Image (cartoon, rainbow, N blue to C red; front, side, top):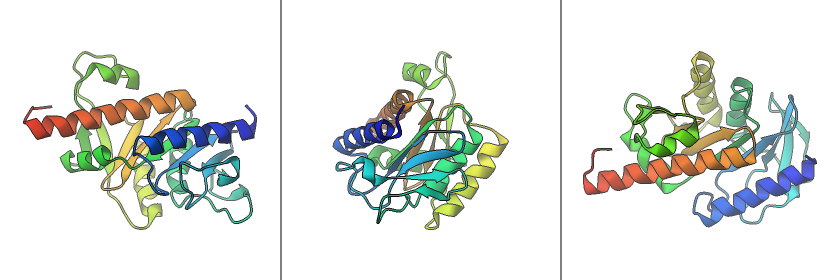
Length: 207
């Protein structure tokens, strides 16, 4: 796929997520890997409902800028994307959004893990079992994003989560996929799980 097409599709995804309330203001970031050594990522400080191809920066897996339109610099959370691309060979797209439900669910975590509800929806996240017990990793938020990336790097080096995603407490959720469509599906399904957990807590249902 042509690099401008990739950026156009990422921008379209950002508009969709903005409309759902997941990328308000300039929050969140999206990337797509275009080679074994480089990926496009949203530029820092850009409103996600107004992105154009000029709002993306090309970086390598070390975080070094390869190409950037004038006045653009890569997202402050580029290091998180680097870690995922480094440890998950099949990951070609990474989405990081800031939804209300994701941040509420961080409070339900225990010992750095959030138990997902045992729903049929988990099949779309690669868990075919009936009523499975699946934990989503939850990382501590740090003002210095590099520290978050370091924590994720250590965890992913030991083992990959059973589902293609991770939470950062009081920050947001990150998901990945083999392409734009699968990454979107993974994000939608995790957000469904988060909404379920929040509503189950509200009405006293044991999730």
